[in-house]
Image 1: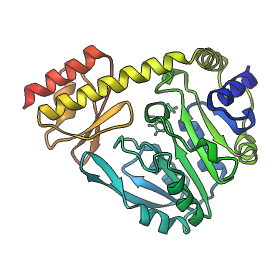
Image 2: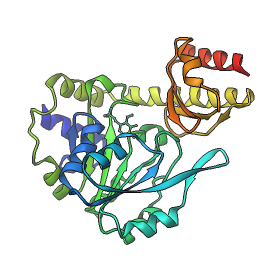
Image 3: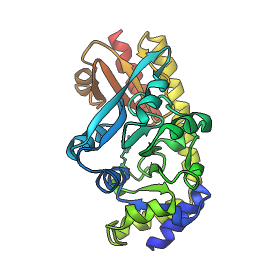
Length: 288
Ligand SMILES: Cc1ncc(COP(=O)(O)O)c(C=O)c1O
């Protein structure tokens, strides 16, 4: 069953099964990278803010962290790409969540020229966490054969709706897959999870429906929140980021809705079904 899952992951991505390896969630894929490819005292570079596990793993692994700040640029969040490239020669591992969580904004946007500019200056590993790939529609997965230091991280928690099953995977050069998979056996992912992954990948057309529905609702909610004069940013993911100086988390919580407080007056709202989205807009509308 494990090999069938690998085969299907390969097929889904149009690459060989030897270039993919499943983990118990993208979280564990990231952990495998941090614990097998770098050593205490090495340096990791990542965008700020980003997915919380990346600074946590940097700390737990005893790495030095270099952060590249993300800043608001109109409806999106941008980074100083030149600084990212400048620092790349000095770091052992660069981790880019693309599109980024929690900003929802692109980083390299699957742009090969940008990737090559970065890759040329990089001596260490480049990890691109494409957990939101199905929503963004872009990837650098086809660069892994040519760039043996490139690792793509994916998840079946979002567009595949399998979060509780804990299934993610890595796409990389086969030699890197051999290194990363060495400490693991086919028993590290529970059989029900493998079965769920196989069933989902054999019938993955539902993913397109999930994605188009969420994208439609996300764009609707974006427009509604803008009309209500909320400071909301564009997104290529399944969530929206809102900047507000009020305590939106508690306000929503008291009304039975959980949104994520990112700090610095930033709140991340995940796109649910239509009723949920309407409810969120209605409740936020009462505040204005
Ligand atoms: C960027 C990013 N990477 C990884 C993960 C973890 O995914 P998984 O549920 O597959 O462990 C998340 C979950 O929110 C995420 O946003």
